[in-house]
View 1 (cartoon, rainbow, N blue to C red):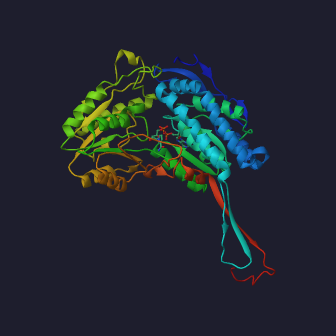
View 2: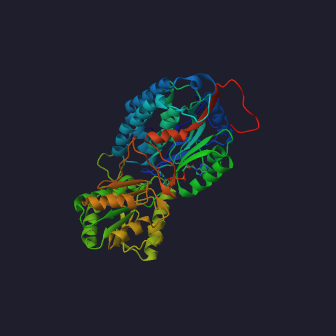
View 3: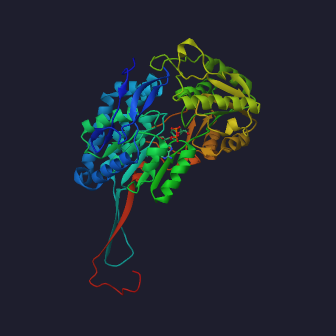
Length: 498
Ligand code: NAD
């Protein structure tokens, strides 16, 4: 696969029209493998947010979308999914160029993303209210589920298309309208996706995209009185700030935040599989995933053998151009993140952890001028160290030995986060007990990093609020209304509650 375009200037998509930002300004988006800018992205501000929210509100309350039958909404969603499938190669190449994700991973993601649109398209006309067997005479009482309204969908840089999909599919199925704000580091793929919105036949204003910086356009969006719900994926600090904005405006919100997930390897585990699973948890996507299994908790009786096998495999990982099909570890997506990872590595050394693999910027020829960090493993980590408590969001693993199961669960849960955990064991009792005792939204046993449109995903504790994917997700985009209809002949005593 080759790079898409030498240089490209994007426009934003508001109210069914392509336009420049009101400011007329742009910022550059970088190709992390080349370390060079490859696109110009409009720098939106409050004026663009006002226009996008007005367009979304208009589409919600008037016109075709407002009165569209849910079955037709479902058809449009399924068509959108089909178009993504048809354009998978192009979208994958743009994401690789803008983000540095592996082409192999993006082809897999783009092959799978349509399923979210097919699944939620199928749910669009199955949003059913209920008739209540109400305890009052001569009263007919029923519920309706109505779209929550205009949704501000805000995404991070690490998986722009997948994470936008997790919000767009249920929101549209519910009948909401959306203003999407992708990360300032990786806006291109979300803008490219809008071409397919037009082609699928969604009415103008149903889906809008504004681009720019969190403190400018993100802040304008999350404080806008015309926004009813915020669906946010990103870091803990931004999430906390956005939750305050949501509280001030009584906006509904779902938050998908960070993690410090543990992988627990018990002595009865299949060690070959466990080694591969732990590698996939921390080095796939160059560790830039919220579900990175960044703490390896390994039983002390197998610690040395496991670590030696793990390091041998990790050492062979092929770094380089993410466009090449045989590359296994790509660049870090942003320069600030590259610097943060290197400073976390220094922090771990200063805390006394022992670096047994990597620990440096990668200087291999095949990494060119890209922002690469070697796969890094720290042994002799104690769970109270900052390297074991703070999210690195990069290819850095902390190894912590444990002596018995109780200790393993206690250490795994001893973190402010609760997004995911991996359990490697062949003992069924242990597998069920671990699934119960670990406080995290996803528990993977003898596997890791599996997601599905059918499976709820989200975090305990500081990892977030609410769930995405699965049938329940649609309810986060709905309000429940209760309707009371009296068919009694007389209105009873007006001074007493009925
Ligand atoms: P970030 O919080 O810096 O930015 C995320 C988005 O929020 C960006 O679009 C940014 O512009 C916007 N933003 C920032 N400040 C804002 C503000 N004041 N108002 C409104 N919007 C604002 O996160 P990031 O660095 O892009 O992404 C990495 C983080 O995302 C990691 O912590 C990772 O764990 C988390 N993440 C979580 C999940 C999940 O599903 N739980 C998935 C992927 C990433």
